[in-house]
Length: 309
Image (tube, rainbow, N blue to C red):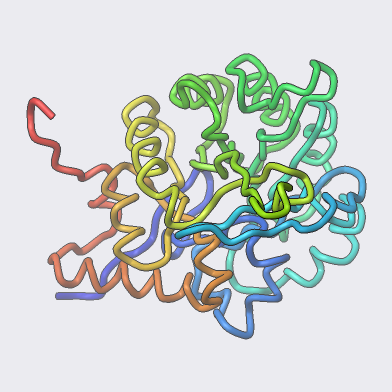
């Protein structure tokens, strides 16, 4: 069998393979480079950027759970202009597309970041984090409302010609409603899913184990739910879906692809093993060879569901 074609298309982006880093789990990308050659990945998504610098939440910010990880970082970062002046130059020439993750607390903040980052050829796309609370409407997360999600998407679409990926929150009643809403307003793709809201308790001390009380649950523990949501979203929209949630090896990635993901993001798995994203790439390749598949794109949405299931 000839070499497997691992390339996939997300919006305007042609990626060499379907494996990306998940925002928030590899810093700004350069931290991962000594352990995982970035030019062998489909794309790199650095940690979230906000308009203004943020100190983040009070510690403890991380707590390991059975098969998972709770985090309550609070979007700690140096702000948009620091990202522009210090981070973008370091990402130039890494040999793979950089997709900036932007997080805003008003629609105007999202627009400002989208327009500013569009000025730099080093940035190939934007992942729009709509799990943040909209401070102008009482703190409801943009991603919890189809109307708010659509409003952000429409505004960002007008502000940039870059590929835009809406990162969906799973903490909703029907995630397909949100996916359809952002597709209608010009999203090129969606990534699913962000972390699930959870908490951990120290029973002896009778206190929360996280300084912020609640946090986001990621890792293998959420994979079955994330797979279900990716499958539902793929059935509901025509734009590509990027799957994430507990992907640690090639088999995990293939499961998401069969459920409808055009690409995947590796997050918590890279915290456990920094070389995990590269191993996921190799695992996908090995699966294709074993199955006699010439192109990974052939597998997207290829889950065989028996009638009556």
